Amino acid sequence: DRPTMTAAAAAAAAALRRAGMAAGSSSAPSSRLSSYAARARLAPPSKGTTPLFSAAASCCCRSGGGGSFRQQSTTTTTTTTVAAAEEERRSSLGSLPPDFLSSLEYDIPGLVSSTNRYDLEGHGRGESWHPLAPPSAVLFPKSTAEVSSIVSRCAEAAVPIIPWGAGTSLEGHVSAIRGGTVTLDMARFDSIELPNDGSSPSDDGALLPDAHVHVGAGVTRRTLNESLRHTGMSFMVDPGADATLGGMVACGASGTAAVKYGTMRENVLGLQVVLPDGTVAVTGTDAVKSSAGYDLTALMCGSEGTLGVITRVTARLHPVPQHVAAAVCGFGTLHDAAGAAATLRALGVDVERCELLDSTSIEAFNAYAPRHGYGGSDTMPVRPTLFLEFAGPSADSVAEKANMAREVCVDGQGGSDFAFTSSEHERRRLWSARHRLYYASLALRPGCTGAVITDACVPLSRFADLVASTAQHVKRAGVVGPCFGHAGDGNFHCILPIKEGDSEEYIGKVHEVNDALIRGTIEAGGTCTGEHGVGYGKIKYLHCNFTQSQQDK
Image 1 (cartoon, helix red, strand yellow):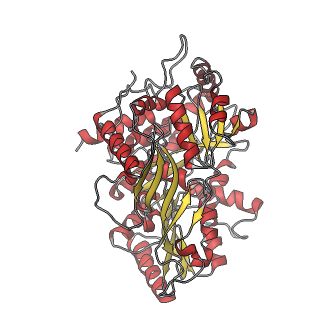
Image 2 (image 1 turned 90 degrees about the horizontal axis):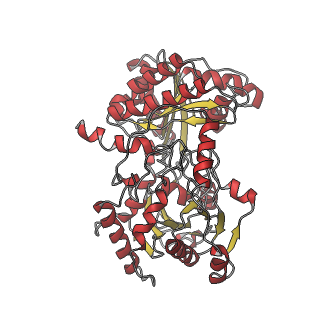
Image 3 (image 1 turned 45 degrees about the vertical axis):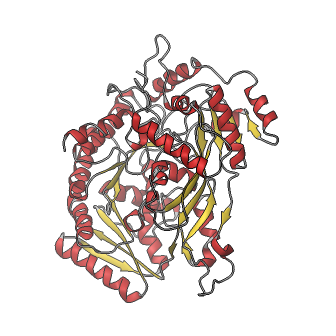
């Protein structure tokens, strides 16, 4: 049941190795690349262990060139049972080779490593519901050369590697589901190199004559934007969490601003990557476009650590809008609200952000806000609500966009109480329900500290139907699940809070909602993940995504 590297994967790997040689790497390509593909595989379970997955992805699973899978049974188990099975599986898969760490530290003077239980458990899960699965060791490299040496040694010893950014992933990406794994914490890759140093104007008076920046993979989004404040430029991809740029590239992240600025794929010009055999490859250039051969930068986006370890990112920047305004509008039905969002896009109305919250989401915020000082003293009407943001070079241009949106939402889709403001304080107040939705959703079930967060993306023409049907499914199942989405690009989520002690029946219903959502998404011509990535949580849907959707065309 172990998938082998496909011809497409082998061709992609060869191209990456050639890129590494072209970049002047001293490491020669080797056959170790194919052995590295085993990093994403699950070994057969020990006798008596319930298999979680029949097979895992091959080296190129995230880009659609993976191996084959058997469909996992949809029978659900409690989180406790899953954790026990996973622990048994990991314990049967071995540990690090003897003296591996000491030998590595001898060969790389100054390398920081840890086998402290606190560090291991701190790197054993992201922000998802998946059970804790800590690595055998955590390494803290500080240079690309160190990463190259580590990766090369790990390839020789068949030691799996997990690159670690900020630990904000949601599908078990960072879980060490195979024993004897090392995690590379990239926090020390914190350099930020601005063109022209970003401190003195160029000849034409611009602080940043070229709208890009070179950053280490461990730089977080907020840290980068703070360093750019004096330039009038900003990195616009906003996944919500303060994720690292390396992790955002690896997972193909996006977020609320994608409707205007695109995803990570559209905001990365180039990368420095350490390939599975230790070769250092440089992809892309500082130019805004290129037709020179394979688009290796795009190949790495969304590869989730299966093709290499990202050490540096050349990120595209955008001017900070001079004028910004926000609006909210309520609707009688979820279908009407989703239809309004799709109509805004179809008519070309320029929105900076376009978010949809269902009635349960608004109800959750109304209960949460007074206890935590958000949203002022007024509660929001409990109904499906569209949250909009507009930006432009002048107040008049922003107002014009807002008026166009008002016509679509109120006159065209039957919305009401369209509220519009350009005051920063009022903008924050209007949007507070969206910004605090995750914690407000958890508060609907006291005692919850985590949730299953669904992630699906469909063509805009199918968005309204999917959102409405999912909300109905949540209600029929009798589970708590506020629904919301990045309505401007068809990306949709449902927050399903779970807590320790939930019955097997309740957990089963939660996963039933998630399963139905994803299968409905694929049938609608969409994808099983719009921005969270595959991890090991969605491996079972990946094959279906790239077979059923193709057969239906």
